[in-house]
Amino acid sequence: MNDEALAKMLVNLATINRELSNESLLKQLNGDVLSYTAVKVAAMKATLIEFKIVAHQHMLDMEVEKDRRKALAYMKFKKEHGSTAAGDMKYMDEDFIKAQNDFNKAKVSYEQLKSVTADSHDLIDSIKSRVIDLQTARKDER
Image 1 (tube, rainbow, N blue to C red):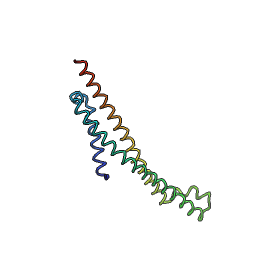
Image 2: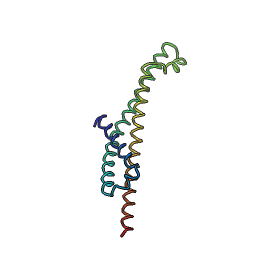
Image 3: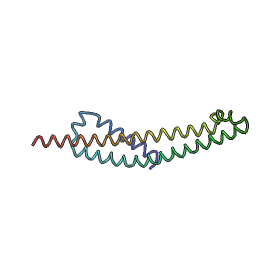
Image 4: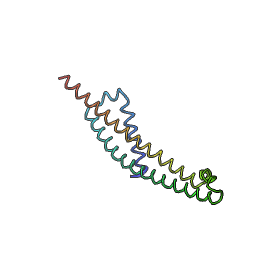
């Protein structure tokens, strides 16, 4: 899957979440529709986990690159200005700044996917709870 597929899936999850937040609509849905929805959300969650793994690896790779650029900047400034000045000046190196920004973007993406994955789990649990409520109400009617 690509970034476009991920974006579409995130929109779909947000739509499901928004619709199920509508109490009047939720009361109208029967157990079959809710069960089907829970299965679809679970399938999306499984795919999200794959994206989360890739995002985590990318974040770790960007962290290594950031640390490498920081060390290179330190060595460059140490030769020119000595170790004391290099300790501070390395943070002004353009390559290090770019690597730091790339790492920050990767970290934000990973954290967002981690959060959406947890939210989708909560959504599945709430759907299951509503289905159980419907089953209990049906039993009480008999």
